[in-house]
Image (cartoon, rainbow, N blue to C red; front, side, top):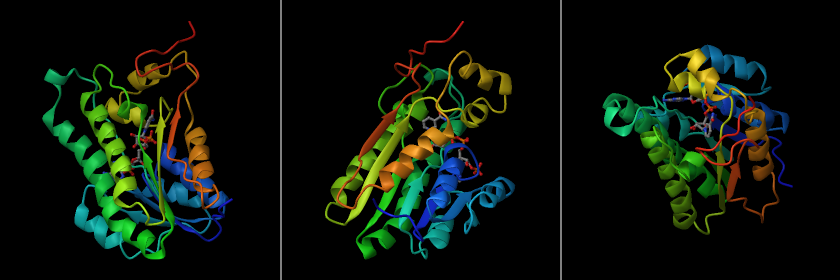
Length: 247
Ligand SMILES: NC(=O)c1ccc[n+]([C@@H]2O[C@H](COP(=O)([O-])OP(=O)(O)OC[C@H]3O[C@@H](n4cnc5c(N)ncnc54)[C@H](OP(=O)(O)O)[C@@H]3O)[C@@H](O)[C@H]2O)c1
């Protein structure tokens, strides 16, 4: 096993959901964790559960700020997780401003974090870079247009990183979950909690801890093993469009 003791890990989107659970589990496994997000009070909540962690308040869309804050860090492990969806309108009815926010976060944000953090791993010729993809990066669904497009882009970045950095010693992993119960749907539906709750009605979705466990498992494999792609579904979800609900 690869030990995480005293390894420096960065988790973006650590204020909520999958990122918060991953930070907690990495800290439990011995890593020192740098927690990134925009919501300082919620980042502080995560910090209180992660001994030895630090908080960086940062918008991943801001390339200069990301470079300034993250490039000096001597990182061993990056979980490039921050992301969101906005709306589920059919393509012709979508809001171009919301599209820009989703693309800027899920694509530019992921790239900004890669650009600022990969040199540290290359320098020491080892380390892990984990992408939070989605099953939406493998299948589309009605109303998912721009979110699905960004997660297809994340998958392309994962595949390209493997090629461009072959021989660098850096291990790349993409973790692609189906439905996970987090703030994701509340954010997507602009704070409409009833609509968000309906997404999970009659289903037992994945939990953020389920996903965090998969990430920690992947990065603790022996040095000669690279877990490339993890696709995980709730047992009741057969595809992005087929979910069996209890009545
Ligand atoms: N939930 C699902 O069903 C599901 C399924 C597949 C994949 N995913 C992916 O998993 C990742 C985490 O989502 P989640 O489900 O855990 O949702 P969540 O609970 O809403 O968490 C999203 C996180 O992203 C951060 N974030 C958003 N925009 C940001 C920005 N501009 N700069 C910095 N941080 C930003 C948020 O932090 P701040 O608000 O503090 O900035 C928050 O911590 C996303 O990439 C999502 O696409 C989710």
